[in-house]
Structure formats: structure tokens, C-alpha cells
Image (cartoon, rainbow, N blue to C red; front, side):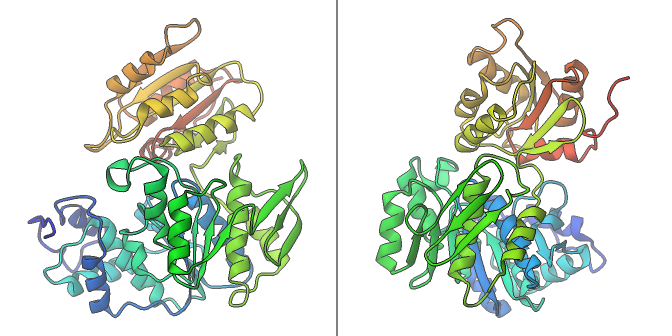
Amino acid sequence: MSAVSPGRSVPAESAGLADWLAYLEALHARPIELGLDRVRAVADRLGLSLDCVKIVVGGTNGKGSTCAMLEAILLSAGYRVGTYTSPHLIDFNERARVNGESASDAALVAQLRAVEAARGATSLTYFEFTTLAILRLFSQSSLDAVVLEVGLGGRLDAVNIVDADCAIVTSVDIDHVEFLGGNREDIGWEKAHIYRPGRPAICADPEPPARLLAYAEAIGADLWLFSRDFNYAGDRQQWNYGGRSRRRNALAYPALRGANQLLNAAGALAVLEALEARLPVPQQAVRQGLANATLPGRFQIVPGQPTQILDVAHNPHAAAVLAQNLDNMGFFPYTYAVFGMLADKDVDAVIAHLAGRIDHWVCVDLPGPRAMPAAELARRVAQAGIGSRADTSVAVAAEPAAGLAAARERAGEGDRIVVFGSFLTVAGVLSHGVLYAQPRG
């Protein structure tokens, strides 16, 4: 039996998107309840069907970047594309893009109303309800392709009601252990369930878990493995992609920054090679798409001084990549952190990856019951030895914007500030517009 919340009354005819989202937050007793039975039943009542090429993107990290590059390349090739990603940073509308533009409030409200009418007594989580609404929007938008990001795991995620024409697992690492398991083998098996028999199944993780490989083989998926079926090579100026039968040479580096972006780009190009018969993409579209792809909050460097970096790294694997990216930036006298995390994440492992690279930490409170209090976060940072060494410190702030203001007040023009630890941390500074504050005179 599903956990049903008494919730609140259905929004009135004149209600806007904010009213609907507030309604959905109170609709279901548990914020996460994995399983496909309820969401599939409502999808059937809606008569939901996507008559286009369907690409599903799963993985621990790299999903957002891969979606952004696929979307940008396909748009550059002239295709009509719908892209579904989550979570959003500022506005919910970011989750649903049609031809590169965020869906309007009115378009989303119309679809939410349709899902409400179809669900009857079936209770849906916020994610399930909004996934159905966005899929229905795409089904009515005359699209050539959709790019759909998995929310959590794969096997029981609402996006998995879609039978992917091609699915990619970008990486497998430890996260969401309470739902997916505490080791890469169990997590890989969960994520592999977005693969389909006889269809291309891309794995961009250089060390794929054995259970992922076994599942793909058991269902008869057409498994593409990094280094066996596709690869990349590059120098300081350009890079090359090599697949099963397709090479793309002399490519400019992706606009998205970071050490893992070539791996993500290679995975995206493997998807396009696997779908070439249905979605042919010329070389110029690949070049233009890689140059145009944008994704806020993924090693995003903000212009100005001191240097400010936004990164939604919130698990150990992402923190390790962030550490590598910081190392590649060159010398800065001091590095400051604006750091906020959720309590159900591996906070200590994230701190351990960054401890030697950040001198001054400002730990911040985040909204919501899952957030780790700033004081506790500061205690964990201090436990790692920060603050006990000369020229290091640990402080707290009531919110991310206040934390960034405190870091900017102390940082010199040649220093850098890293805002990381959660989507909520990055969103907290973006939504307050404090990034572009004028430097001190």
C-alpha cells in the first residue's frame, strides 16, 4: 500500500504554478517512494505516448552535463528536442525545455491539471506527478527526440516508464544509499534497469560494475562500453572521438568546464552514433552543440574578482572531481568555501576530498528538514583538522547568500571562492543575485 497524505484541496481554476507545486508537496506522505505501478497506472489513463526518439540518461554524476550536450547538439542539427532534467536551481520551469526554451507556467499548469484529473485516488509523489506532466507536454509538442534525465537510480524511477531507444549510464558511485544500496555493484544494477533488450545501452563509466554488465547481457541489450566501443583522445588544442564505426576528429573542447567533461562528451557522442540511423548529426552540429552547451552550477566560473566557482558537488565522487578541477586552475593565495549539505549525504567523505584545497570554510544553513545545520557542518569540518592550522578558519552563516557575502568580505582580489555541497547551496546564491555584486573599491 502506498502512503497517502490527506494533503490540501485541489488548486482553483485561477491557480498559478506556485500554487500547484505547493499542492504537490503536500499530496503524498513520503517525498520519495520508489516504484512504477502507481505512475504507470496514471500514465495509462492519460494515454501517454511519445512518438519520437527517446534517450534516457542515468548515472551518479555527469547526467546533467550529458543531457545538456545532447540537447545542444541535436538542436544545432535542426531537430525539435524536449529535455527533462532535475532538480532545478531557481525556477521549476528549468526542468522542462522544449527546443531549448523553458516551459511556461501556463503550459505546465495545463499538464498538471490533466494529471490531477487522470490520477483519481492514486497518490503520486511530487516527482512522479511532475514527471507525468512534463512527459505529456512533450507528447503534445511534435518533437523529434526527447532527452530524459533519471531522478534517482533507474529501476524504480518514474522516468523508467519510458522505453528508451537508447539509454546511457554516465557513472556509478555511492549516493542515495538508503534507496540504492551501499556499494557500486548494487547501485550499478539499479541504474542498469534503464537499458532495454536489443537497444543501445551505453556505459561511460571507465570501471563498470559487474552487475551492470551482467544485467545488460541477461536482457540482450546492445552494450557499448567506454574504451571498448568508444573512446576519446586529446591534446591541449582539440580532441577526437572514436566509436564503433564513426570517428569525429579535431573537435574543440566543450564549453562546459571540468576534468570529466570529455568523458561526458564522449558518452553523448556514443549515444548519437548508436542512433545515427534515426537521428543523423553532421560534424558541424557536433562542434556547434559542444560550444553552445551550458549548465549552471557545474564547475561554473563567474566573471570578476575574486574568482567565484559554483558547483553542485554533493557526493564523494563529485567532490573528488571538484578537487581535481580546483587543482587544475593554477595558483590562488587563499581558497574560501561556502559550504552547505544535506544530512543524508556522506558529508565527511566530501569534506575529506576538499580539506587540503580550501583554507577558509563558511558553513551555511539550508532550507528544508533534510539540511544539516551549519553548526554541525562546521563541527565536521573542524574534525577534519581545518581551523587548527595557521591561516585556516571555520565559520557559520544563516544562509548561502550571507555565507558568500562573508567570504567576499574577507577574500582578496587574487583569491577564489567555491560555492558547493548541494543544489540548494548554489541556488541560494544564484537566487539572491549576490554573485555579481560590485567589488570593493
